Image 1 (cartoon, rainbow, N blue to C red):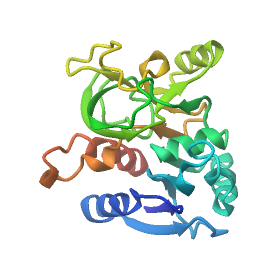
Image 2: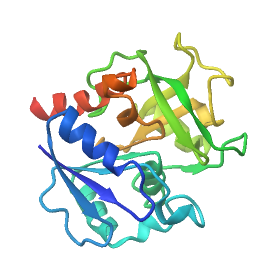
Image 3: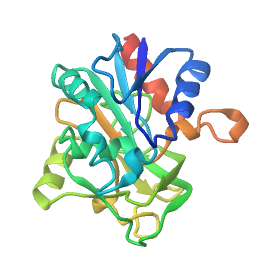
Length: 230
């Protein structure tokens, strides 16, 4: 299994992702520069968190036009697996690989803290090792993390089992208090209808190493490898 991690100017979670995939999970990892016109035979593409191009205009709006994104979009259209985390999720919505948009947090402030998310499906590449309703604690770090979509899109996401995670409290309850950014329907992560493109705002890669005191996020990467190995 060879993972490709795309590096944009302003990416700041790319090395975290490289460490988790390579050192913690023992997988091959290739760093892909945003100006590249190839994916170097990678089997799974990850768009990491950060502030691509300084988050000018809208977060992810400029990165969506990076040369490598044409390759990523063609890869996804052919069924290739792509995961976007935080800024990566924003880029995927800007590229229309995932529906909806990410807007400014309701607080209008940057949020950086541990939060809880609840698995809404076990029928996806990134949640296959999670039970439906299982709660994990992972960090967030974003100023534009409020997922928004119109009523018809939200209805479609729910009907097609495309919601991966929802923000919740430690017991799995949904509430405005447990929703750190005001996301529509408490949504923290989704996938596309073909179930090969995934986006989530929380950072599982920041909760995989025991030295950090939290390994809840490791299950996301274990899920990916579990499905690939089947």
